[in-house]
Length: 156
Image 1 (cartoon, rainbow, N blue to C red):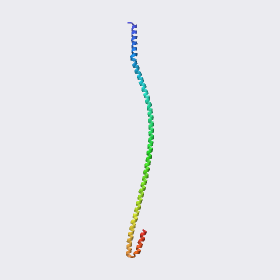
Image 2: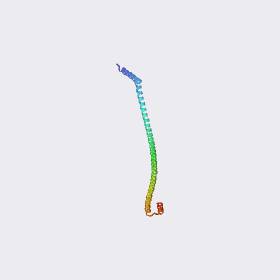
Image 3: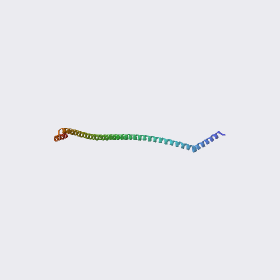
Image 4: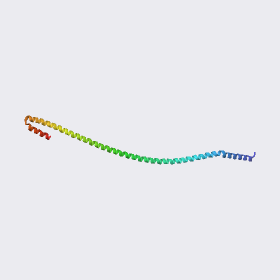
């Protein structure tokens, strides 16, 4: 064997190996590498988009929170106003009821005073009649005593 023929054979075999690799092995490897690079680029783009979406979502949530705080403050103010109105209405109603009860009690008191006066008059007139009977039994001037009793009743 000749060393030159071996080198030439090895060179031809190496050339065939290079051609076979370039024709059948290299394209799938390059395609796989390109696919991987595309996936990595898509992943980076998606991550960037997700970061932007997150920033926007945080802004929207901050705005929604601020709006909710404003609405809550409005609701609290409205409920305070309604509470004060209810308290004022209850106070007015209680005052009116107290005045009504007071007037009714005063009317009842006046009636009781009038009844007591009438009862006292009746008792006094009974006493006067009893006294008059005793006087009449001693003295029999009916006209004088009748005038005296009428005058006493008029004074009472």
